[in-house]
Length: 191
Image (cartoon, rainbow, N blue to C red; front, side, top):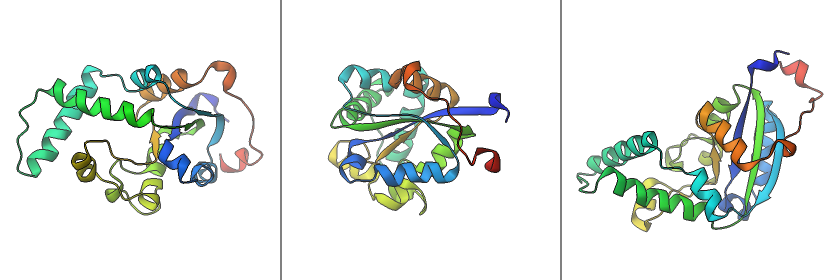
């Protein structure tokens, strides 16, 4: 096995997924895909952890504001707020959602783990997530509902989006001692 080709990704079953009893089903999908579970714990995230998990970086503000403006423009509405005002509101919703209840935090490892994790989870707006994805199979929430209720999309699970994001989130949620190296018996067959 070529160890340097392995990636780690952070996956979290948010409190709505925990409350609905979907943790086992979500873990099963990652295991069936051939990823290796390296870390697992249940946490009730603090405000401090939420702030670190959802940093308002310049890139995040730029991308989130552009996406939000485009979505509202498609509805015929031009937003008057600054990018920072738009993103500050969204960021506060995300942090409140993350801290609402217990979360099951996980680190998965494997070839293309980040990309595979995103595909298994599906698009953020569940109504657009294809069947077969976690969000597509288990939730019906959307940006339209979130906007009307002044909250983020309740989409059950978080998946790291990039290598940098994965590295940051793995280190934020887990210490080195909480991550385990082990060999799946079927690893050589799959890889």
